[in-house]
Image (tube, rainbow, N blue to C red; front, top):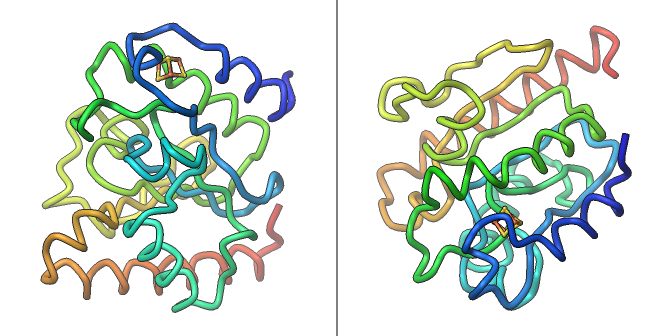
Length: 189
Ligand code: SF4
């Protein structure tokens, strides 16, 4: 089994898909390596590509706010993406790009062993939950898969674009807190 540092080294040198050509930085993910909760988005945007850190732009600000809302510190969770290099102009990652990159995320899951995975948006949900996943119907509903609790919610960038998504998004975070407390009470990791 690799360590997260070793994996990050592979990602930094990765050219398995064409996204490597235009990246400024790879964005491996960051946070508590022993986190109970892991958040997964789709891929780096402009700010993340500049800094090499996941969720640092306005969408990252909203994620931090939602975590503060439930009394969880950003440094206590782990935050990553389906693809580790920025798709040009923030387009959705292509199928072949996600297929090339997802093995890194699978290793991150194996190393961190989160009890809860929160899928931020449809692309993360389709890749982690089910290829036929529909965010309009399945958002906010827990899925128990391979002994991990998975909650799909909106991507923070989608919430910033549509204020009607704000209330369900924050309500999903309350649900994350509730489930986390339930798991701690029942024995945790
Ligand atoms: S997106 Fe993933 S697979 Fe593609 S070059 Fe970057 S690290 Fe490699």
